[in-house]
Structures are given as structure tokens and as C-alpha cells.
Image 1: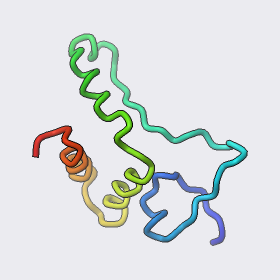
Image 2: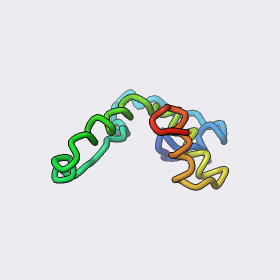
Image 3: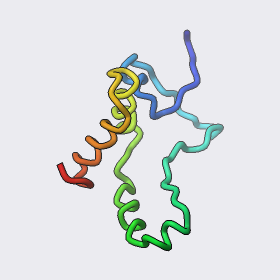
Image 4: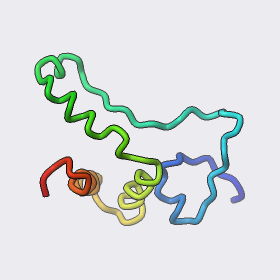
Length: 94
């Protein structure tokens, strides 16, 4: 295969030594994660807004590739990978 369609956060990109082409025509929108929470939940628990915003800027494409590789290639559990990331970032206690 010479060319494939892939997400920039796919953990197999570095694992398979793939090269991501620049989208100089901006054909694809940015793939940015965004927290979603129901307004009714936020009204009941306004402290959650601050907690959720602690994640802002913490996950780069490269970091997400690493996390996805843990799941896709090393077959680790999503929950375990996410928990370890949150611990490393100091967002939850070890």
C-alpha cells in the first residue's frame, strides 16, 4: 500500500514508521477532542467544569498516538491506559 487514510492520532503511525502528509489544501478538519457534558449535570455539579478543563492542552496528537498504541498494539485496556495517563499528569492520585 502506498497511501492510506488515517487519523493523525492513530498509534500505528509511529509503530509502522508511516509518514503523515501535510494537508496544505485543508481538506480535512482538525481532529481535536472536546469534552461534552450535559448542562443539567453541570448545573447540579458546577465543580465539574473546573475538573474537565484541567485536561485542556494536555493531549497532543503525539501523546494520543502513544495512548492509542498502548491499546491497539499492546492490547491494554482503555480504562487502564486512561487512568495511567491521568495519574502521570497529576490529575488523579496514584
